[in-house]
Image 1 (cartoon, rainbow, N blue to C red):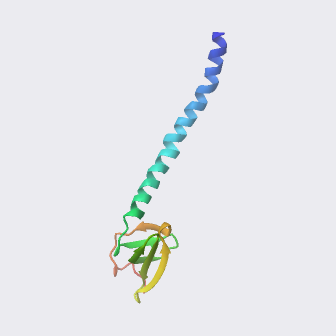
Image 2: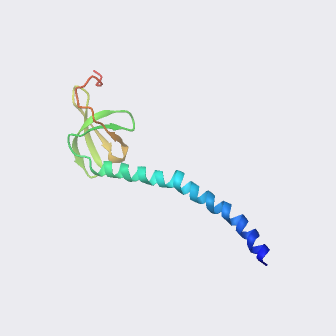
Image 3: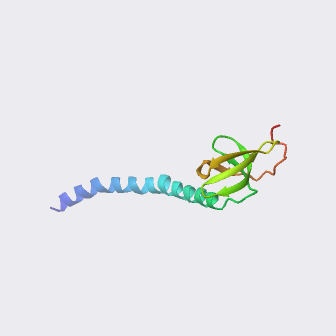
Amino acid sequence: MPQDVANILMQIVPFALIIVVFYFLLIRPQRKKDKEVKSMLSNLKVGDRIATIGGLYGNIAAIKDDVLTLTVGPEKVKIMVARWAIRSLESTPEGSENDLI
């Protein structure tokens, strides 16, 4: 009987270790990143410079629920994008050498 218990434990322990490793290497960092992105999206405000997942850079002109109006380019063209389409909040000010004409 004790030998059967030892065999069962020898089979279960590696699976438990794999689950723990997956949690700390994959699941936990992804949850932390998702939490940061959610926080960034909820803290957007008018005037912020952002980048979209499509590669557009612009300034937020208006926010209504989950739709943002951006001004893009030197002509200040207004476009509407979904809040979830925002990739990042940019720290470079408008008019820097990174802007394309």
